Image 1: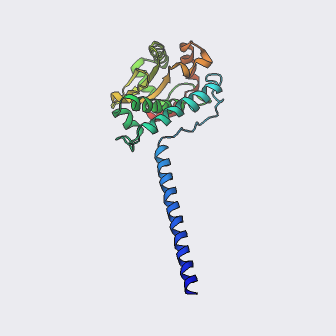
Image 2: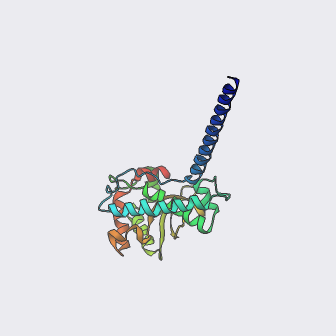
Image 3: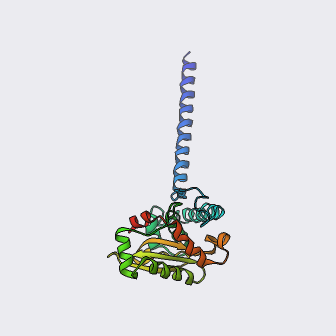
Length: 227
């Protein structure tokens, strides 16, 4: 009987040890998975076809669902084992270079871009942002003209931004590739993507038409909150 008793105890301990080891392995796997998914694809506050005809459903599905997801995946892989492993996105953009900067910059840029739109957007800004625009450009229409002209003039791929400095003064900046005005000490408020993948399915090579149409879906309450 004693032998049977001790055999049962030994077996129970072995089972417990295996379960604990398995739990530890699961915890380690979960930790690794969490680390690998530090940055995730943001959820859209609208359906993928909600911005038509300004931005088509296929463009959203490819631009947001494929291009942005690739930037995020690349970023998560690139920062592992670096000083940016636990850094927030803005810090990475400000302090990195090379491949890490390119993927972090595009992640930040697209997060701002896609969360700026609404199927019920359009119109004009209000409040302090409207006052700042009028103070800088004289009117909202003049601001739009200058912004569109800057976006059309970006050579190759890049972005055009409305940004503010620490005093709240506004300026339009043109940025190549993954550029963001945050690297110049400015706060990005509104960004239009002028990479061809952002508009080619809907407008082919007509970048100016693409820029002119985007004003119809701007959620100005979101932009005003950034200001």
